[in-house]
Length: 112
Image (tube, rainbow, N blue to C red; front, top):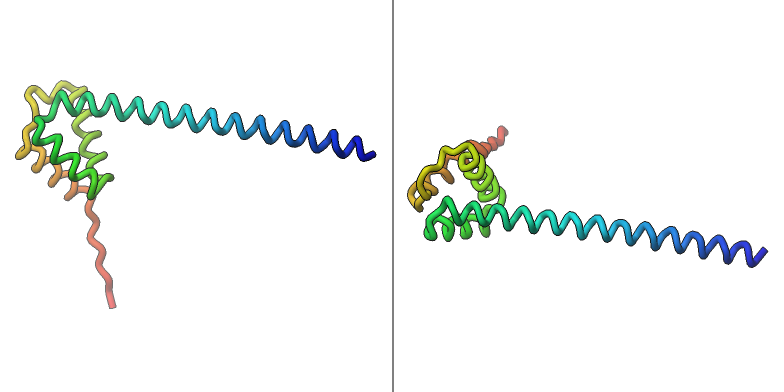
C-alpha cells in the first residue's frame, strides 16, 4: 500500500513537472513573438519617422505608453496602406499625437 502511494506521488510529480515545462515553453514563445513584433515595429518607425520624431515618441512612451502604442499602430496602418510618402517630422507627429489623444481621452464629470 505504501508503494502504491509512493507510485501515485511520483506520477503526480511527473505530471506537474510536465505541465510546468509546457507552461514555460508557452511563455517563452509568447515573449519571443512579442520581441519579434517590437523589432518589426521599431524598424517601421525608423523608416517613417525622423530622428527627432522617434525621440519624441520614445519620451511619450515613457509617460503614456498606451498613447504611444496607439500612435504606432496608426502609423503602421498608414504606412502599410501607402499613405506615408515622406518621413514624419516632429511637428507632424505632435499633431498626430494630439489627434489620437483627443479621441481616446475621456472626460469624467462628477455630479454632486
